[in-house]
Structures are given as structure tokens and as C-alpha cells.
Length: 551
Image (cartoon, rainbow, N blue to C red; front, side):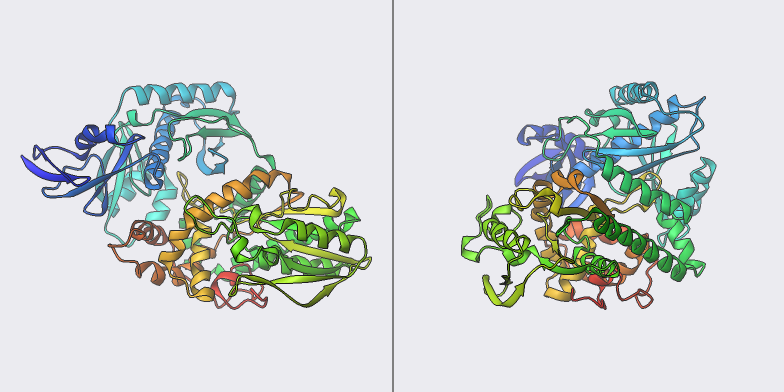
């Protein structure tokens, strides 16, 4: 028998016991199913044998790392099910593309149509696999053996990825005869994935899974057509450029094609900004361009580039940051922890904003406020505006799409734009890159450069930022007149050089260490490149530095 401490309580187990056995004994103390062990401060899969004298805690499906583990395992079960049922109509390619709400879109390149009947067969086979509680087995293979294995199974995306792997070994998972690679931890067996749904959607499949906040419930999948179209467009562009995965990007870097890639994608974004500007000009009567998007979407750079395009069409844009309409610090609402809630609509002086905008719309002169973030108070510095026939206000802030912010303004006077960094690049075909990871790295680099904030602080604040986005931005996306994807397919290779030193500064004793370690492992997939060849109006410059705009 060996002793361990679980949540501070001494317990004894046989030497051969695993953390899964310990988790079963402790499950009654947790609100949701246990997914991972935290052993002496390090994450461990439940299949590991216990370490004598270890300090042990557990993470559930309601924790970030636990939920990611659930999603990965469910994805692998789906891939296994598709292999089993799609034999006569075997697809040429299956790729886990992006998240739409709570669902994950899986594209299927096949000669046969992906129908509701196909989705039903995949779901039924998944349920059989789950009911059988098949072990999710893990083996560490030498890199050459892993490459040979995936080459044998036709998974050339993984062969391409591991070509750039610095480590000598690779963790390979299998469910019976199905082998795959996943970036992160997995559950012990298929029986742990109890809640999922599969349905046909837009030529592919949606894998609908529980949200972290309700990890044992499936919510109805709600299509978001504009978001889907924007994501699909980015994915198709990447495919045309021959870059679906990180391995593809690394190959282009090695082949000396990075500069061409940068120029082409920057031109593609500029063309889209020009299209939006022409939509605004063609509509007529637009006086307020309302730009909103989640943190680190590049809203500031976008608003300046859009303004330049509007000027080429004979309009006179005036950029305004909605943050200048913050209420004074002492009047800012508090969140459930007693901290200032700068994300909610109540943090803005909505009445003053509508008063000023209505007067401008009526042709009157208005002195606009400037918010002093050091003192936490509104100031007036003689910034007076009066709208002429060709004048247009370009307003940027997280609540721009919410009609409660601009309730007094006629709808025909507003043009709404949703902007986000919608990453289309995958690690490989079955490991997607969440858009939140790209934005978190953007923000980390920018905060360190412009605010002197540590990576620890950025990671610490991120859950609060994400909650604000879920409440105040995402519900209004589909009301936008135009979508703009600010993600650049090469940007993580550029941001790597800035982000890695910041992440390495976080020590194992700090709560943010696990997230820092995860991001460092993620960045290992990329070949780093210099930012010297980026145009000075690039959205990446807003984060890496060197922008020609006041960002």
C-alpha cells in the first residue's frame, strides 16, 4: 500500500492503483464528472498509476482543461465512428474546421452527399463505441515510427506536421484499430463521453457537445449563417494557397515563400475592407459605422484602414472610440466578485452617447468627451464635431452591435460590422486551433508592449474577458451588416518570438503555469519568423508593434 493526499486528506491505495480509481472514490465531492488529475501541481491523465506521497486534486468537465479533454476524446470517437460506417462512401478528407456556437463543424470531402442518414449512422456508431467503454490507449513512439504509422494510414497531414517536430518521441492514441494524434490530454475510455449529438450541416457534420457551464447537457445547435460563411471563406482561401495546417505553413516558410504569402493575404484583407467601404457608401444615409468584436480582434487598425477606404470614396470619416463614453470610475458597475465590470453595457454612459449622437445627426455641433484611463474620469478637451453631408462617424467598441447602446439612432443611419480573428489554420486535420488561443496570444504580446502587463496578468484576466464576450458581443454577431475576419494565416509564426519569453516567465508555482505551458507546447508546432517584412498597416502590427496607426 502507498499513501497519497487527496484534496489535503491522507488516503491509502495499492501500488498498482491508477488516478481513475482514486477519482471514482472522490467523485461524490465534485459537481461534474472528473476528467484529469492534478498531481503535485502537474496535469495527469487518469490512466496513470499513482505516485507515492503525491498531493492530488482533480479537474472536471466544468474546468477549462477538463472540458478540452472531453472535446478531444469525443472528436476521436467521431473519427473512429466515421471510419467504421463510411466504408462504401469513404471520404477523401475529413477536417475538424471551427466552432459554430457550441457545435464543431467537420468538413467532409467526398463524392457522396453527407445526408441526415449519414449523420444518424455516425451518431449511432459513436453511441455503440461509448457504450462499449473501449480504452483510449496511449503509446509514446519514436518520431520515425510515428511518421511511418500515420503514413501507412494515409494521414499525410500528421506526417507533414511531425517533419518539423523537435522532440524524439510522439504520443499516439488509439481506439481499437483507429490511430490518431491529439494535442493534449485524453479521457481513459470512450464511456466517459456520455453527451453528444451529430447532424448534417452545409455539406459536412456538426458535432454538438456540452458547454463548460453545463457540461452534462446538450443545447440545440443554432446555425449562424454569416459567421459560417466568413469562416468557410477563410478556410477556402487557405486551401487555395495550399495552407490547411501548421505543417503546410512551415513548408512554405522553409521554401522561402513567406514574403509572397504575407503580401497576398494582406492584399486579400485590404480588398475585403474596400468591399465593406463600398457597401457603406452605396447604401446612402449612413452616418454611424458601428464596429464591434471580441478582445484583440484588431478593431483599432481595422477602423483606421476602413476610414482610409471611405476617404477614397469621397466620404470624410471620423474615428471615435466608444471607450470615451465610459462612466466615471466610481460609477462603474461591479461584478459578482466586487471588481469593476468594464465589459457590461452599464459601464458606458448610454444616455450621454445617444444625446451626443442625436445632436450630431441633427446637424448640431457637439463637444465629444475623452476618457482619462489614469484618473478614471471623463474629460473635455475641445474635441468638437459637426457632421456635414459627407461626414461619417466610425465608432469602435465591444457594444457597437447592441441596439440598446444606440437606441435613439434610426436603423438606416447605422452600418454594423462584426470583426474577429477567425483562425482557419489547423494544427492538423483533426486538431483545430481555437480562435480564442490566437486572440489570447495577440493580447498577451500587446499588453506586455503597451501596458507593461505580464503574461500572468493577461492569462489571469482572460476568463473575465471571455465571459464579457459571451454576454455582450457574440449574441449580436448575426445582426451585423458585414463580417470581417482579421486573422492572418501566418501571424502565429510571427507572434511566437514575442510570446514565448513572456510565457516562460511564469513559474510552476503560479496558477497560470498550466495555461502558459499549454500555449508554449502549442507554439512549438510553428517555425518562428521575423516581423520585419510585415507592412506597417498590418493588423498584426497592432500587437507586435511598428504600426503606422496610433494603436
